[in-house]
Image (cartoon, rainbow, N blue to C red):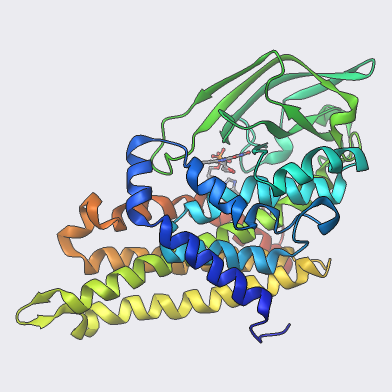
Length: 388
Ligand SMILES: Cc1cc2nc3c(=O)[nH]c(=O)nc-3n(C[C@H](O)[C@H](O)[C@H](O)COP(=O)(O)OP(=O)(O)OC[C@H]3O[C@@H](n4cnc5c(N)ncnc54)[C@H](O)[C@@H]3O)c2cc1C
């Protein structure tokens, strides 16, 4: 790993700062309140080249890696966008770009990647179902071959952007779990055109991040051409795994980014706000908890860089990725919690944003992998018996 700040990294950081300065907390307060998709921000990310960071150069992207993507996400989050800095990149520019680059046919790469890089195609990722959250292998949505098409039936839950996405990478079973030796067999991925007949989408009212919708998706006899199979039939699990590490790294960047944003805002406030005749920041009871969380976030960000570096080298990185995700979330949540404390009662007011960042960062405990499951993976690597 090289810790020097190369030109590319400096450019990514400064570009992300510029974007975030235009789309800061007030913009997101409004979008959250209105429950409105931030098309202006999405287009700006395209303009800045962020949708194409992971897309290979031959498909009109920048051909960069997860180290650069993590840096872009963390900077966007930390410099004013909060969760949106990761949220608007992780599914399409992160997971879909990676999934199609690594497992797509030449025809699929031609069809999707240049549009992703240009910000002209929005993907959702359909993994979760009512009975398949943490236990992904339990997916029941099935795809049956019929001539040169597949017919999909089932339902998905919590699928972000599915109300407006052009396509969904959907996880299905092509062979029931009872008929395969290993649970990971019998899974197939498709790129599903969201305009196909038989798809019904219903948003789930939610706690935060209302500048995008997360929805239930019902599929009834939805026909998908065989050319939309992503990876091999019955062997899609590994194509899915290729997309999960970038997602976890994206959430790791979100956790440290939101945490730093809250902490920086609280530090400013702690310098300005005087109680008992002195700025509250002079009290170590106020400054130390935020400082300690900051130190932990810096360490977590380094672990993300290591995991991303391994990922970019094509090396095994599951252990490092789960460590990076788990520690970033704990440090980031502590930073936001302590920042809210520094604001006193005003931390509860919408106008100071910290209450929104608190709602946003709490998602990182639950998804895309819960803290318990991240620790389960780490524990297994350390030699504990498998618990799931
Ligand atoms: C806002 C939001 C957006 C989302 N967007 C998407 C999306 O775009 N696409 C998508 O596919 N999914 C999405 N999800 C779904 C998310 O990934 C799942 O909610 C998550 O995987 C957890 O699944 P579950 O809710 O069914 O929890 P469950 O699987 O029911 O688990 C419940 C609890 O039990 C714990 N638990 C279960 N088994 C174990 C064990 N062996 N050891 C320890 N603890 C255990 C879990 O950690 C969790 O805390 C989204 C969720 C939310 C809230």
